[in-house]
Length: 534
Image (cartoon, rainbow, N blue to C red):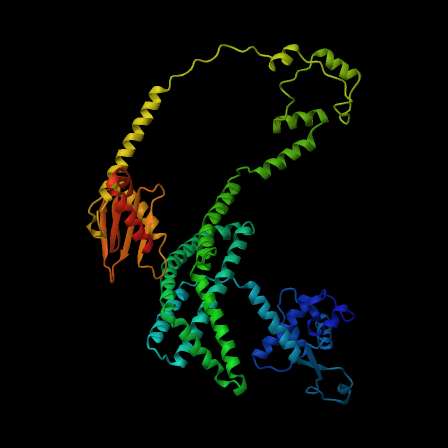
């Protein structure tokens, strides 16, 4: 490598950052890294030969190039040069140019900024399931502090700081991880073997985080709802804001407390929006869970494409490349037209035919493709085509099929299904409020209908909700569920398996039976009014 020639580069006007916009930027970065490594060893000055030895042995530049780089860095302000008088043994040595170099404050600041930049770009991030558990623990601690009525400001302040710090790290790392995951999917063909070996661990990692996010996310959402009750959140934020403003000037204390409260409220609202959905806006945890779930089939699709590519299977891009090669190798335009028609199936209009006389006339007097239809010579078509619109003779009409038997069979199936559904509704109807564990064993049809009801009810579950009311889409069944304090886990045995969950008080009403019974209309109206009031 020759000596540097960047002394007169226009980038010198940028000061200590000028070495990044020069042809020898890689050499300058290596030289500055050598000075940073020396500082970590508490070495202050380096001679040119020390810098030359400290550079990587692979493709190590010549000493002259290192000397030129040191001079440029000294001129830009990254290094400071001092006379080297430690090795003077004769008068002639004073007339020789011997310099030692050390980092300047500007040069060190530039390297710290570049290190932070490289770290931010190279950070892959991680899905921190442990952070979810820590956030839940700190929320429980805040609830306990708020229940004291007069929480300790120092403890509340430290707990909130820990909560915000843990949540900020979780959100930043999750964003960085999903970005790096998408780059991994998009750039999968860079190192095929490494990607195939990595995908199993990555998919297991995503599955574990999704499971933790579902369970911990629901727990955190419940804790946030509990913390918002009875003004607990506002109490804690005002206590912490007052502590933040304690050191403000007397004439600025109220303004400082208001600003601190606004900052803490903004942070806490960000935490709530990460775990709690709002009308028209899904929670960030839900979006992250959806993105992680979608990443798994995307990864599997990449693996499938890689396996097909490795096994020699053709894809559309390879087909088009082969077709382009065939077009290039075709001997003439006629062959290319035949290839085009064979590949894409583009033929002439099948409802128009041309007789030999017309073809001879076209050969004798060709009509260019640029001539409009109005100016082109007319085309004679068959009178039969003009009269009937088709050449072929119409044959005997097909006999009308008798579908009465098929309709009767479908009607019988519909009747049996309706009977089964009605029996399932009658089996599930509780005729009052009962415990979930008292439903007893359910058959397949009743269990399928119960799962549909249960899913519709749980879809309405929100933090702090005590009672759930849901109606099926067809309006035939209604379920009302009420939480039981300190509920135990119960089991419902069915022909398809065992369903377990927390105990609830359940009331299931067969609305279709009410419609068929005129005497029950008043009861139904009263029941619906009661449901709306609940």
